[in-house]
Length: 298
Image 1 (cartoon, rainbow, N blue to C red):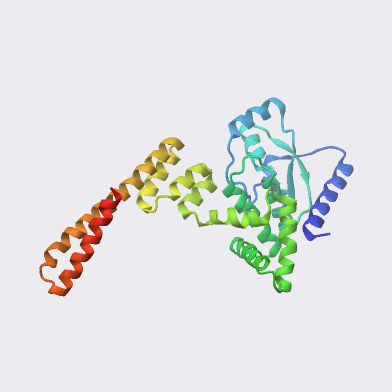
Image 2 (cartoon, one colour):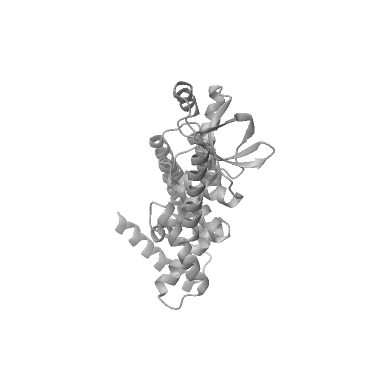
């Protein structure tokens, strides 16, 4: 059995044993709970609606927490419910307490995050890479590199090092357990998302813009123009209007380039008179080719 399956089975066994022992939910005061510094979920949207639901029905699913000592507990899964409970004025919440190591807690939080239905492709990409990095003992960049190396090794169909073979087992297990797509498809279609400009990645992680809006803004290479459009998108500019703005910017750049070409040709005219007869003849030949090219386009 793989290490990840062992971890998940270990956690389930702990939960079952705890439930049998308590035979009831445990409740802890909100003041005893601390959000995790490694919370993978950056967007905690819909808190007002959830708080209203909690006021009416209570918390239906207990939070998962781990003890820190001195009566304090770290939230492993359920920070959104915790925040909504604060808004609803609750003093305590139902919890399941598990004695998890920091690594186990991060793995559980990442897996719980990957179960969300509202993950956009960028959020899912980052969450999967972070889970894989945790299992490989590296960082996000190292996990991405490991995936690329594995794909290259597979394409070569040659000798594979023991290190790559070991990583392959971990990759297969992580994607089989926690992902909705094959790791090969992930490398080809999702890893390129990491090349988004930093300002767009930050906006996506904050939940400030839609993933589709980020793809539109990526087309704008001028950093100042993109920043201005990003602020408009953050302020609520519709995707339709954003696409129109981006299209206008790109078309304007094309017209600008056309104008630049005309200016360059105009600037060369005075210098043509100073050329030697041989070079002037060559210039006239090139000019004739340019005229033919332009007329051909028309």
